[in-house]
Image (tube, rainbow, N blue to C red; front, side):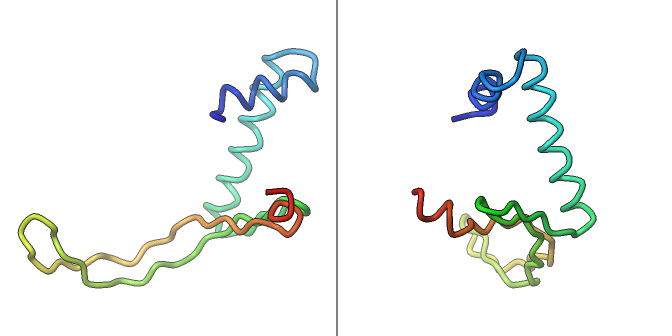
Length: 88
């Protein structure tokens, strides 16, 4: 399922496809803004979106075999809730 399919499914619950598109976009933007501020977004029965810190480490260029430094960075992480795990 992609974003367009999700919008079509939400459109079945609301009045128009335009309202469904706005709702889906709003949810995604809200989650992105919260993660950008390093907040955690918990949706009971679904899961938790959070930001994890990935440490700096050494890597290897697969073409040349040269050792390279990989910088530390923040990455988004999703942890599914129990209800979602049980449903799948």
